[in-house]
Amino acid sequence: MSQERQKQAAAEAAVDYVAAHLEAGAALGVGTGSTVNFFIDALSPLKEQLGGAIASSEATRQRLAKLGIPLLDLNDIDRLAIYVDGADEIDHDFAMIKGGGGALTREKIIAAAADVFVCIADAGKRVDRLGNFPLPVEVIPLAKRLVAGQLTALGGRPLLREGFVTDNGNLILDVAGLSIHDPQALEATINQITGVVCNGLFAARGADILLLGTENGVLTCAPPAATLRR
Ligand code: 5RP
Image (cartoon, rainbow, N blue to C red):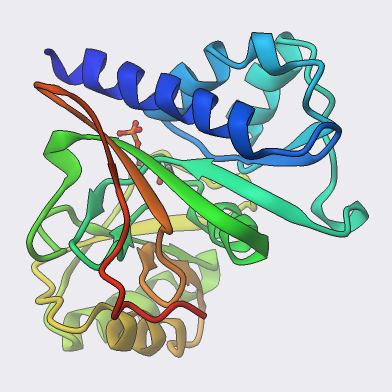
């Protein structure tokens, strides 16, 4: 099965998950990226079930709007039961690197608000240790150089994502070379750097369920029982 087909199969499994678990009329959180695009494209049959969607990016908002799914503001809802999103890497504790699409800050906010984070990914995203994929860090433009220096001091090689501005009007530094032995600790450390808006480590709040597209179909995986969330 090709990588694209694995993404699509995982996305379709997520639609089944939502159909089975989301109460009628409830809101659904929707992430960003090519795997999520497959998910959105398969959402039509659930249009009547959904109370609306919380979009993690302008691109996702536009795709959902084309489908006629009502868009909601996170500030206007009491509860968000399910958030579906992709990942650039996911480890065995379901900590992730995200932000390849540059939507990491809104993604992290929606993930923090959701009861259940369903990660959808192709088999290539599953890793033993995070860090082969450069870590995206969203930065206030004024602080670009200051933050790049601090990330270098942490052992990383920050590279400005050229020609890219986030939906929040900020820049992205993609940081290669970090050794990520303790994802939660590094997530907290990078968040403490003045000028950082958010970093793409999703470890303090990782995924709860992984729907992994593989050569042999979609695996439904749960994190180890010892992994403590929130
Ligand atoms: C966007 C993300 C995406 O979830 C991540 O980049 C995976 O993307 P894709 O599904 O295209 O492989 O974090 O900010």
